[in-house]
Amino acid sequence: MIAYKLSVSEITRIKVLIRTANEGDLPSLLKLSAMLPPCMTSMPFDKNTWKSKIELVEESLARKKRTDSESVYLLVLEDRETQNIVGTAGIVAGVGLTRPFYNYKLSKESKFSEALDIRVTSNLLNLVNDFTGETELISLFLMPDYRKNSVGQFLSRARYLFMSDFPDRFSDIVFAEIRGWLNESEKSPFWEHLGKKFFNLPFARADFISAVNGSQFISDLMPRFPVYLELLPEEVVEVIGRPHEESVPAKRLLEREGFSYQGTVDIFDAGPVMECERSNIESIKNAKALTINNIASEIGEDESSPKCIVSNRCLEDYRLIMAPIRYEEGEEATISEQDAEILGISVGAQVQTLELR
Image 1 (spheres, one colour):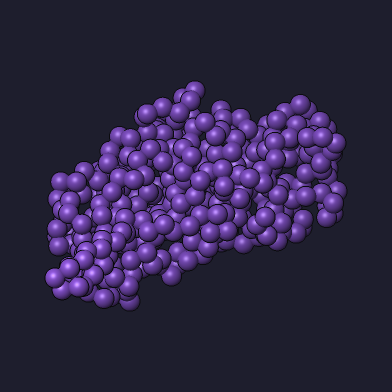
Image 2 (spheres, rainbow, N blue to C red):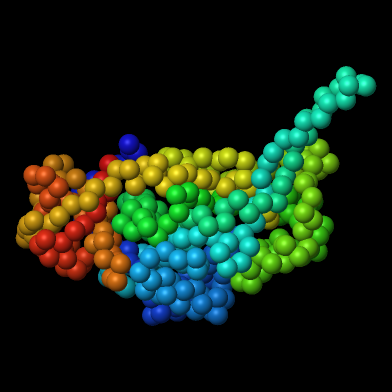
């Protein structure tokens, strides 16, 4: 069980909800992306890219089931008082279905010479498409002013509740790419000594092109042969699989959920790729499906009422909030009138909850 701390008083102060993105969010999302560092390639400051992404999100939500076509789901965190979009969290149901998706995979090669009685083991980077068809977590961002009172936990874990609500839309393996290490000049040693040799592009530009136009240029220009780490400078080898210092908290959150690094890295900055079987993700294992059997004027603010992330399980108007829930006998629960109204539910509705501890 993941241990998180949140007081009831904190919940009552937070007036935010999470919902799926729609066409009306385009101006807010474009404004949000203008605040981001270049490394957030899934959220580029490009209007046409955002427009296409939102259209794809709406198409994905309209589909009855998972298909071989690319599906993307984008959750937005909305301040209920200002109606501003203050955070995002996305899921790609299956990468590499419409355009290639590349990573480097670490491996070893051992050779033995009988004549010299010498065994040599080499470390290799192989260009792979191992995650084709697998589910990727993307676009997790929260405005600095909201990084308190467990709002970040709410936003991050909402993705797992979404996957738990609609499991047939996602693969058995889930992964996330972590931003790789940069030096004091904000340059990637890995890119400078490897990728740049073949593309002659600055790191940020190559990353942006990949996000906006796809990664076909990687297939066109990158050598297919393994890269021997022994031929790379030590400063490059040291950063392979090493996260950027600002991404260490994100990596730790994934580790708490059961994700681990298995030797796959990003092709641009060699950041670690974290992966986990969907059924083994802690938040998915701990989610509870309940039926609302009563709606009260309010839920008493005491420790006997668990604090939860609550979803309405309705794909057409998907919503999540943080709210106290009173468990009843069996798999039933009581929710407050205000929270029921925000979720758009009534007595008899199916919800899913995930406790915040």
